[in-house]
Image: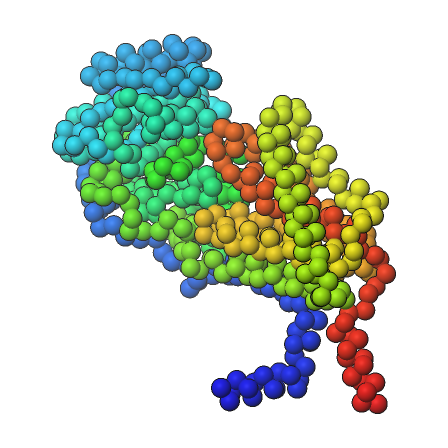
Length: 574
């Protein structure tokens, strides 16, 4: 107790509290910079971990796959027949696939989704199973490059023929053939867990195959695993497939970066590319594994790249051996990580290592909120008197955003292309507007808005780290507004402009050279990806509150109470 009193007296004597309050703007900025630096240091040696298998029962590569060159003619024969189906409508393609599967003795079912062509699926019941667990092999007719998935379809048929000859299966195998890997596959997954009559039990894992028109060979394979709403498959599943690929001598690429050159630069690129893909998952480059998010199904997409180097049957052996490993499990995936960031196919960063970066961003916004209240020169006694007004403004901003969240998704695609530009010019009206709120209310409103963003980042920390980090970084100019608004109004408006989420959408449309915003809305409507809702109901209301607050702040500098007190103390000493 005596030590605490001594420390408090020392703090009071050195006048540390007023000095710390003055430094809040700088502290907020420094903490935000430290957040970025923390991420940049993660790919350095000693900060990441090597990939390993946590679940011993998986035993990847411990069994011999007999899907070898003897199956090559089978794959080639199926590919020849499927190639002739490319010009046919999907209904006729499905009829041909149905006939082939029935010739193999497999039952065939269809899912009528009501908005596009039917999704075909066939269940191979395990000879040693209890019909309670299953694995899914998904082969869309069209891959993520909008290319006819010719090779994958031939492999899928050959693998199902091969699987039937093996008696080791304890889990059912479902072959799913949707028109594409987007809404139609998502509809099938939802229906499988709700309304379909023909089911095969709980799906433990799913592999989506993409193999276009490369022919008999490929060079390496790409792996995609980023699910919707920040969800990731269990790391053991990815490590199992990659370890099997290594046994086959096949290179793996993650985030379009090969595992042949693993250095700091490539690890850093993979890290930030993975964060970006998690943020825009469902909005761009949908590969199919996203459709399984939300159902505790571990899924990833494997995509063949190149035309020479490895035989097509080696691609099939990766799928076969991965299924054999999953077949060994007696329970769901649980041993390894569900929260991680990949640096390469062989290295990853666990949640305890990367989480502090987002925590520091939340702290930066908390400092910004304190700065808006303590360094603005307002009378703190006025804040409780204006509390009801603050709550009314916050509720109105949220109600407006709720209305936008309902109206905008119903707009046509042509209209959606113009929405970001229209809403990104709101700061222009802020410049010409003069609000009726007092200065005290305005600064308190800015503090409340920054605190809301801090709470938003904190709430998303674990469930969707990538989105929390991205919102925190893109909205950081809002923390500068209370510091510069009284000195340079144009600079404050510029901070508002570049931190507007719809301005970010305009930049995204230009960067991705495609209709990013309509795709973002479609990901909510079709795939239930709630990135759009988090932005419109979390980030944008806080932005509106700060934009409204700037209209009520005078450009005449206000002397801070702390500075007044310091001046009075100096006068008394003199």
